[in-house]
Length: 104
Image (cartoon, rainbow, N blue to C red; front, side, top):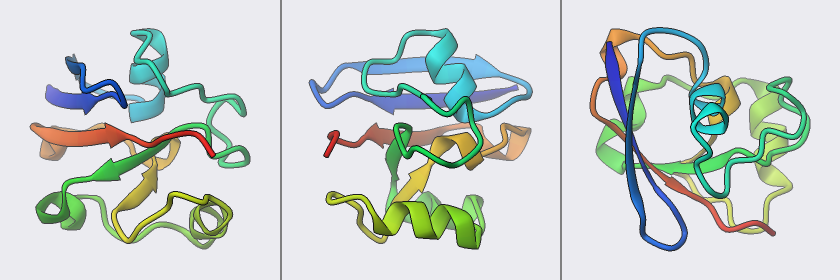
């Protein structure tokens, strides 16, 4: 089981646990403010934009070309940006901390 920690734009801290699925699904199912997942996880809307703690970026590997293309369209994207629809939950992500990005 992995504990995923979200910090919303309003600085609310939400700790959730899961064993599988995507981080976006976990957030949407638990009503994490700012994570919409409008495209249902097919990497075509970027409404699940989050920032990963710098020291945890290596946990996730590199984003796919499609994810990178979507992130390039985001005004607030940084080198620590990811789309959480593309992050599959596994035990190795236990303690992952994500900050929800502002919507463009």
